[in-house]
Picture 1 (tube, rainbow, N blue to C red):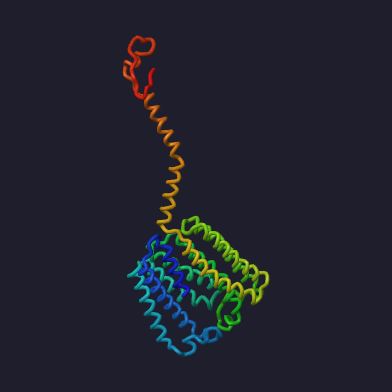
Picture 2: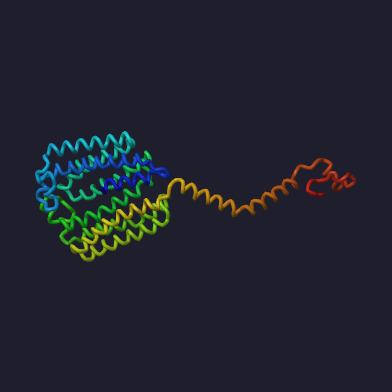
Amino acid sequence: MLVVATSGTGFVLGSGSSIDYMGLCCTCAGTMMVAASASSLNQVFEIKNDALMKRTKHRPLPSGRISVPHAVTWAASTGVAGTTLLACEANVLAAGLAASNLILYSFIYTPLKQIHPVNTWVGAIVGAIPPLLGWAAASGEVSLNAMILPAALYFWQLPHFMALAYLCRQDYADGGFKMFSLFDASGRRTALVALRNCLYLLPLGYLAYDWGITSWWFCLESTLLALAISFTAASFYLSRTTKSARTMFHASLLYLPVFMSGLLFHRVTDNAKCLTIEHSHMFKAFSTTKENIKLQEEAKQDAILNQVRAPVAYASVAPFPFLPAPSYPNGFHF
């Protein structure tokens, strides 16, 4: 659900002023199938580990409710179907991102969990790709503006999973997973990583406004939201207890849907951008109307005064005052 929600949000943000709702549905469906494939392969590879952990031992494979061939067939079918749907109904770029994320999650992140604590940072990259996929499906490209939501997903995942790893550190140890919290007995480094990444969320609202993605209201709301989750991370850092870790975990669950809702509610469409620019130009033109009229009148006068005179005009001034004086338009005489 989280992956589909972030992908759909990315699609809407990348759509500009006109949203293709059929394309949105196809993108969400394709993303859902690829995510299901990745999750299934993850459980196939970790069946023995999941059987040793309280939080995962009741999953379909370790509990014996589904066989491994069944799970592999399901994973292959949904992976191919989801990627094909994205390629046909969206574009090849979106399908490529989906396929790449499937490989990254299943064949790199999953085995890395049993090898090195860096797996959490690799997993954060996996989580940041779905909104990029959605943007690419809508716009057909990956631009700088497309990086706001992926950046939020990346930085958000670190405090989210650090809290989870701290709360479930014994369970992860029983399952044989090399989580960062297992090598940090005091929890200080785990809390510091969480706090640092919460602080990285602070400028995202300003960037979204500065890059023309949202209105300035989102800048304010995003900053307050980032300060709130940073406060829970700071509390966890100062008091590394189960209660403070759970508070930060719950705050992370609240942060993401509120952040994405704010992005959608305050987003600035292409039409709104054009209207703002047009109004700006109209205001500028209105404010300088009087000055323009004055300058135009002065230019006319200068043109009249500086026009090339006929020879008789030069002869009408000294030392030839005897010739008749020429007449000029608008009553000017010399």
